[in-house]
Image (tube, rainbow, N blue to C red):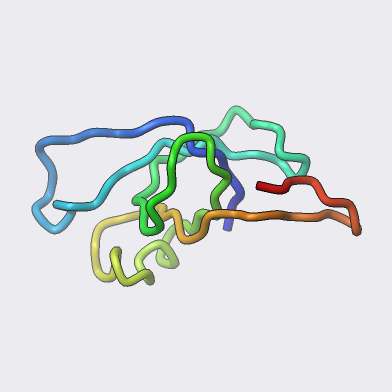
Length: 95
């Protein structure tokens, strides 16, 4: 799993029909302090996340284990919208 920030959308009018109705978001990965890293992923949005929200993503075969992505050709999925996280007892992010 990875922490990330939704920074944009990805639109594709032509795609495999099993992906119809799935929204794709561009997620910039963040470190444990919430600072953006250079890495991005495109993730299927199973949670209704919006721009600027911190999210938890799953990748690989785990990305195909949500109700929305079951047995679909998806390699990353947003599976949670983060409310807060802490590191060593220190709160690093609060929504």
